[in-house]
Image 1 (cartoon, helix red, strand yellow):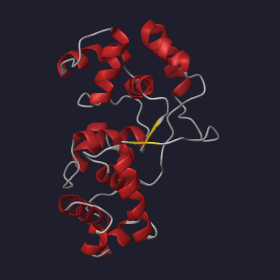
Image 2 (cartoon, rainbow, N blue to C red):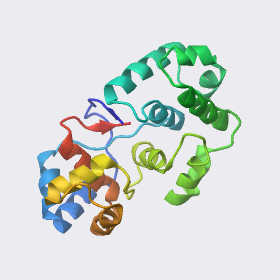
Image 3 (spheres, rainbow, N blue to C red):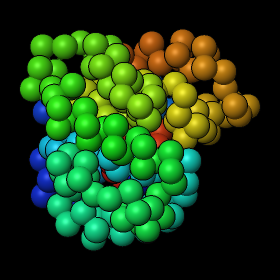
Length: 215
């Protein structure tokens, strides 16, 4: 997960203000977190490939390390596109600090876009689960990465990534619960945040970090 400063001139999701009011009414503790960040909101990237490539690069390494590798990758590829990534030589990718496994994942991702094995234009008619199913067919994209994509790229309002450790930490901190909370308990708790669980998730993340989360 990359954490960066963002600019408030960005357009907020159309549902954001309604979601804040709805969540604060349903849940006073979450409402306190929401009220601490009156000007902050989720904003999305429009390029699906960019978001997914960046999520692969950032898997299982620190934010700082991921940023350094990504900066080198962007410099090598010049413009982050499926075609440019697909054509980039293995050794060029390796020199960015990417592992053999992540190079394989990036090649698989770019191949899926170049050869139209996936088509983001069709996703408007898909359910959230349909999109997750399509994305997880790509080598290197698991459910968590697909859920991050739905939140940060497609701006879906009701995604609850129950496997996300930061989310679980945020929930435990908010309700003074012992960490870690079981996945089942977290999902049960999340029922009251429907249909805006993405917004609730974002504020639980926000409560742990002074800088807004971005992908």
